Image 1 (tube, helix red, strand yellow):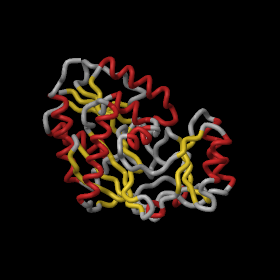
Image 2 (tube, rainbow, N blue to C red; image 1 turned 90 degrees about the vertical axis):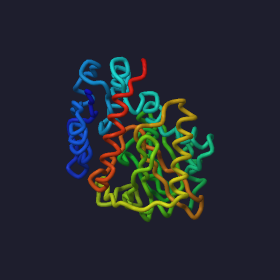
Image 3 (cartoon, rainbow, N blue to C red; image 1 turned 45 degrees about the vertical axis):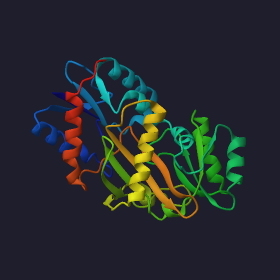
Length: 298
């Protein structure tokens, strides 16, 4: 079995790829010919890999069209998981609207494409707080927490729109600001582990500590939280018409104002945080090997 683990060629010192080394080791122990594949440097090649598994191409938001082109090329020459159709859908956070229509509770969101829409959306939350972010982003890029009347909120939204993007305006979730978000992981639809990342956003548009750094800590989950995550994954299948994702991170928070809500479902390149959940390594490696062996006709 030839398996390519899709990565990039450089990571910030404060945000390394912890998963790939242990995952490659586990795959090789299972007899796979597993190698890291740099998405923008190594041409997808079906002869070299039975399967390409997207794992940590974390620089794709700065080169989104290049990444979409890579997906097209990869799909034409190899099997790719998560499936390119699922990935394309998940690249843009308009997917939250699809999931809301499918019955999944999400944070109320206004999608803004001009200054007037932005001003109206911000005014609707004044004197409260809002989160402003683009629909295409990762690692809290261009994401800020503001008082709704803060001119910096309008300025960030304008910068996102002027660059050709769409700005999302969401109410602050106090529990999220306090660091109570949970990320639930599912491999082949089965819950494996969950972490808390801690608070990331400072009021006024910055990041806690000035740089994006997650501090993953394993956490327990309730039956209701796991059922919510399962429902979100079923909704993904219903909306996309695709297979159950090989891997998924379902970010949730239990809000006093909105109840249990989905913040994000990451199906492109979520860090699995295997360094703090080593028991999940076998589940991930076994699922990848099963996928490599099970080769449906193209």
